[in-house]
Structures are given as C-alpha cells and as structure tokens.
Image (cartoon, rainbow, N blue to C red):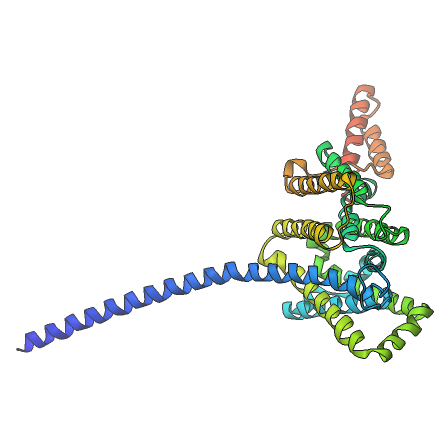
Length: 408
C-alpha cells in the first residue's frame, strides 16, 4: 500500500511538471506571436498616420490660406508668414519631445552648433523660404500645380549636387529627371485661372529653395557619426534658428502684423480652432512621425511611400478636385511626368546608379606633394617624373583628408 501511494504521488508530480512545461511553451509561443503582430502593426500604423497627416496638412493649408473670392473658397487667413511661424514652432516642439525621450538631449551641445553654425543658419533660412513660398503659392494656384512643381525638386537638386558636392550622375537618372521637368511644363495649363504667374513663381522658389536646402543638409549629415548632425538634430537646429527669423519677418510685415490680430478678433473660432490649432497639430504629427519612421521601418520604405503619396495627391487633385488637365497636351505631359517620377524613384534605390563623387584637387596639397616628390628624386629625372606623377595622384586621393606634416 505504501509503495502504491508513493508511486501515485510520483506519477502525479511528473504529470504536473509536463503540464507546466506545456503551458509555459504555449504561453511563450503566444507571446512571440503577439510581439510579431505588434512589430508589424506598429510601423504600418505609424506610416498610415504620417501619410494621412501629411495629406491633411496640404489640403488644410490650401483651404486656410485661400481667399473667399478664389475658385475654391477658403478661410481667407492670407498670412503665410504667421502660418509658417506656427507650423515651424510645432515642428520644433516635436523635435524637443523626441530629444527628451531619447535622453541626454539627443547629443546636442553648443560646441556642435558652433562648429557648423553658418551652414545651419543657411539651411534654416532656405528651409523657411521653402515652406513660406510653398504656403504662399497655395493662395494663388491649386494643390495639383503646387505638388507638380514641388515634384521637380530632383532637377535643381541634381544641379546643386554637381556644383556644390561635385557629384556626377548616370545618364538614365539625368534623362528621368529631365523628363520630369518636361512633363511638368507640359502638364501645367497656363491659360487656367489656377495658374497665376505669382503662384507659379512662389512654387518655383519653394522648389529651388528646397533643392538647395537638401544639398546643404547632405553635406552637413555626410559625417553624422562624427559631428552628431542626424536628421532630427539638424531639424531641431534649423527650427530653432528659424524662429527668430520668422518672428522678425512677421513684425516687419505691416500687413500681417496688423491683419492677424484683426482676423483673430473678428472670428476667433475660425482663426484659432479651425486654422491655427489643426495646422499646429498636423505639423507636429508630421515631424514627430516623420523623424521616427526610419527607425520603425526603413529609409527605403519612407521614400517609396513619400513618392506614392505625392503621385496620389497629384492624380486625385487633378482628376477629381481641380480638374487641372484641360487638353491633350496637359494629359500627355501628366503621363510623362508621372512615369518619369516613378522611374526616378525606382532608380534612386539602385546602388549601381548612385551618384559618383568627383575628386576635388586642392592646389595647396598638390604643390606640397609635388615639391616633396621633386626633392625625393635627388636629381634623377626619370625618378623625379614618377614621383611628381605619384604626388599629384596622391593630392587627388587625399582631397578630403587633412594633410599631416611628414618627417623629412
């Protein structure tokens, strides 16, 4: 009887152990499955909210700044400088929150700003001009034309990259970018009331400013591992430097300085609750999610979705809202433009088609190496010629590396 009781308890313990092990395995598998679902759902949710906020901000800006006498009447808040000031402050607030979440102020330091303050101020001014000109253009032209002209940004960006960064591009990329511009010009109905000269000029200024800003940002972030100028840190600096410029600009503009208080006093609900507050919230959301998207997804995904978003806005606005394309020339231009934009987006991800960096010869370095080579030749003409040739090549190869004094 005693042995029977012991055997019963032992068997029960073994069954209990198997039950616990099975339960633990099942719970672990369920936890992994749930984590995998969250890992997929969270980036998708962030991506969807970012796209929705970007599209909503575009159409809100068009409605807020459009006058009552325009083709698509809006709120009549025709103060683009103050509107840009509010959205820039919202972007700055989003950067501050992300940097606080990251801890240690995100690597910010006065020495970091002091090292590149001239470039940062230049980027900030171009950033502000680009946003202001784009917002101002929406007061006079449709969303479709605004987006079409902004989509030609790769063309001036390529020119600035060649002139400033000494980059060369393969011919398929050059052809695609050229066709983007050609298609955009063909797609614009210049005889339409929406295609006002001032609005088109503002959109063109926004495009050029954005292209130059992208080039300067690329130079600043080229050594982000060393100087710590990541996209988020650079956006913080440019927004911070841009706030005083916008405030001074607003105070110097008599029309906006007097018009904004009058508009708010006349209709505070429209100005604060329907224009400024939604614009600030959307700008905050766009910048907050835009700077975290590459962490939860990838830069490739963000770029693809950004291009798809822009194409969708152009197609939907042109066909269903603005009815932009009036004749066969406009439709042909729109087709060329969209196909070229898609081809450019695809080629941008091909490493074989990536731009090449041209060597930049520094004259001082070349002379220094040449003199050293001539001395090293010790009167031997053949040896001296070879040394001078090698020295010249060395000066080219070391164009980005600061030269250190060599021992004699």
